Image 1 (cartoon, rainbow, N blue to C red):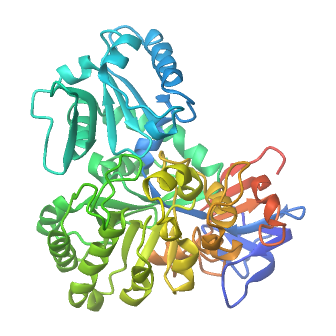
Image 2 (cartoon, rainbow, N blue to C red):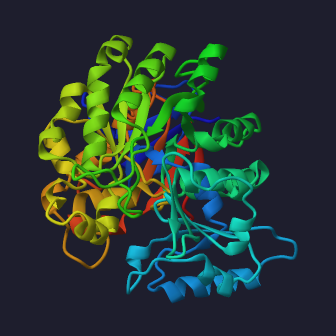
Length: 510
């Protein structure tokens, strides 16, 4: 590859030793301070270069597949959602076994309403319909879909909603929803691969050069391996695996970090509770669904440390977060000496006394800035009187916690700039900021999608900064996010994305 010299704009390195640079030289797959050959000059025209963006919490195969399914986000009423289902059912090709979709949330409909299988039966008669909720913790099924199950719907950690007659309404939650999806309604690996191939350029167009993937449960590692083997992978993957596979990993002698700079086995994933949208977040008032107890989670952390893996744990409610922190603290003698970098995913509702514990124990808050404005109405209803501790990103930063940002795509859109806007402005629509005291500054938001995710995946010596010797993963924006008024952040646009010295996206005008 011919060397490339980026010049004529603002280059924000995110490197404390040299925050700004006039030019940036790329030689091969890395940033260089000199090269033997004459470089190709790329005139930035006043644009801004930053390290490439990392989405630290995304379900990439699921997000990619969702681009090809019914999307129910934004349906203002239950009837409007059913109209979308009916239209998709009419367009099904002959012989199709499933009609899949995503994005419904009962609390978003006006008026709020709980869905049932009979509604889907009328909209799509005789069709196996499986619709994941927006938070991916509930599954709405038609009668035809339910009839395909040949096992008990209720499993430990799951919920089967029943009607007055004691029959399933068609809505499954938590482990019951996931078990049904995985066994009967999931796309095939070939379907996932086709969707992922289409999703990679879309991610690149949004400045994404790395992800921390959460779809280990569906075999994402194998999917990414197949793309990597074919030279198709255009972003770097730090891959999760379910904690239930720890024994198998240990038996093979595999530890965190196995792989190369494009694809590495990263961390194990566990769940403490459910979500606010499915009313299954575990709270200090005793409500919610317990998926993993504090004692069992502590055992997972210990086993993972002995096997050489950090842990990422989903925790939404204040009790779930407290018990996750308790377990990490109790097991610190196992993981701290090994240098493992632990994380809590979401951390959406925190008791005031638990905020400072993240920094004190050494647990990263892996959050989703977009969730705050997206969930504000749900949180105000479900957590009335407690939302000063909800999505408390500013408070976590002030207490010294490390913060990384992700999208939780397809729950929110895989778009780091949308996350940046949400973190700084605490709104994504016309409404005033929601709990602006928990906003984060632009620089902190940028660190949460560049330098901090690289650190969390043990790649701080290779990524997250623009300095000689680092991998040439970068994004070019049409303006400098640190130099524009906050109200202009929604107008930021990605002009180009580079991963390993190769352009993965270039806007037509750049």
